[in-house]
Image (cartoon, rainbow, N blue to C red):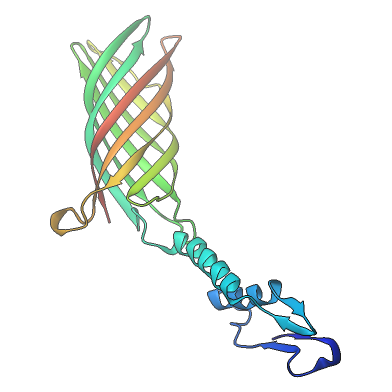
Length: 223
């Protein structure tokens, strides 16, 4: 309850705000409406005057801000991704191009942190005489803007390289990001998005630093 009195404490000079939600650990829209009336109040001839238009405007802004994290995300619980991939990578002193696949599973483990996910990412790349596999794990940060969901991630794991029978298993560090585009909400495509993703991967083996730039695109299913 908030009470303001004008000069003389007349009935016309009083505003009594009731119906606020009370403190429960959460803010409600009605709290902001009442607060707006108080903050935007102006004294005119001993009577407190409240701009209803200003209060309504502030309420709309608050509604927009509070509905963003509570709105349906492109990743309500997690997602599964599968796509094709292309990589340009160092191998000792040479640089090669590879073609392959990329897949991942993302989970949203924290209900209050819908923008943060944990990703398990796997990929395989091939060219004549060389096969490369990667298994990575790490956090991903994302947000939803309409039908778009941009994201960035940092992951670490292991890479397995087989070159004509010579096998190396270096540690791999991955930094990258991308964007998901939500497909039609009708029928079969209701829970599907299309992804474009790019990554930089760093490894070290045979006493040399290796770097790779890769791109991937494919279909994503949200669950």
